[in-house]
Length: 318
Length: 297
Image (cartoon, rainbow over all chains, first blue to last red; front, side, top):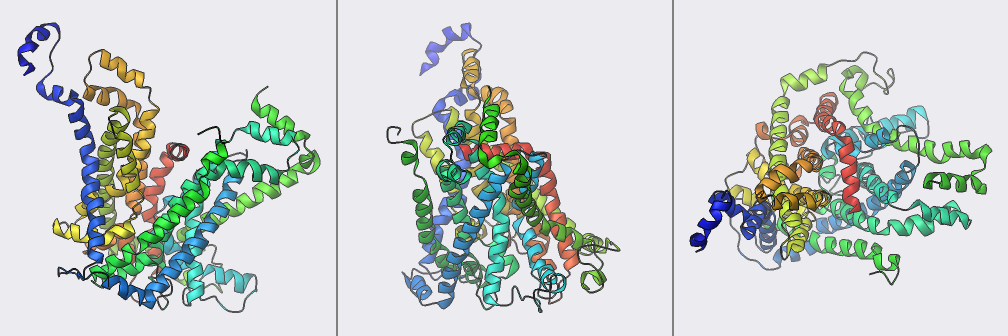
């Protein structure tokens, strides 16, 4: 429609081709720019998420389309001791591992926030457990926890003479559970420490100066300045940590595969065992879906329990 | 007076840092715990490395050999891994998948971040939030339905499936990171170019992208390490030994029977960790600063 008015302008300005002009049309450009990302996420994330919820209400198995069975899968899970066991261990695993990661990670962040030589090199080294593929470091832990040749047993029995027998780390339920939690904490410390270190560096030194002038002790400075200032970042990092610890898969699959006697199954490994290895897609999907309420609850808890920005910034500042 | 000087003056004035014991105190409070942390965080790698080069005789005999040291190092385990197993093939597949999904994710998330941050439109903050929320959907919930989707597309047992699926967790992360990065580039530069008659694509290609290279590099490193690390999708979607990625292959192909070949297993873990560790050490400054930057957002 505007073609008739264009010639006069064409003489003034070199006119780019129609394709270039199309890309200057903002709605078109926005659509083109967003299409790859939204397309990928829609096909491989949103659709499967919906499909997963649908599968949870069917009796689909590998190679056979299922029919809608309502809440049957969930009713079955509620009567399944293995599912309850996985719920129990998922909560224990997430609770203890998150606590350990944050206590030790916060401590490490406070240590790294001091001035000493080779600081950046040390920060780089400290991140290693987080960089290296989880399964590969999990294998190292598997070897460290070996019933016969564990280096920890060697230290305790042959070097320190504290114990007389090797520890059967992965052969009995509770030691196996704690062995996995220890490996998870080891892997999680670097991320927590580096994220919290970033938060520590945003705290203005003038706050500490003022506190020191008022005669605050080191503990008081931590309690009344560092900790409250860190709450928003703690909230975000902890929310992430809880989500990914609760839905962890690799570590358990690599070290115990849920054993001994299914005592270390997390919901994710149980879902894999039933859904992919066992072929019961519907039931596996139901186990995966049953993680969602826990995740929502844990997220809300960690986020709103810690993120008190308003309170922290003062009432006048919204 | 600068802040630092002021702070040190105040610090030296407080009674709890009196001169005579401050050095011992510093060792006890900082260096000692820090050394413990470093020791524990690095020990599994040391153990992995030392096991890779230990002959079996030393590996399984703690009575006559000190387990913390090697007296006669051997490369038998690594040779076995490289020549008697499909390990080189697995490495190649993993590299192919990681590079492919990294480029796909960078392409998609650069455009998305540019649209959200620079082509401001109604609802752009919501699109940004939506993409970000996608990161909070863990793979453990998705792998079962995704397996059926992959089968429907005829991509089961194909590395291509992984290249297409990994962006689901890479795109949210990279987009989030790049939005922050684009924000730090002055908008005036683009306005000037717009006034000079540059097209939007020219602006993106000639001005914004070159300035965003450090951001793109850190997003690339994140994507590469995350794809190299990924396990559950690779375990669920890949069947044949040849198409497996390193983490899955080591666990499912090298662990056989009741007698574990610890030397070869640890050598495989070490070799599988090296590309990521090397790649990461080259760009560690970008990495740490972008991580800290992303958290500050």
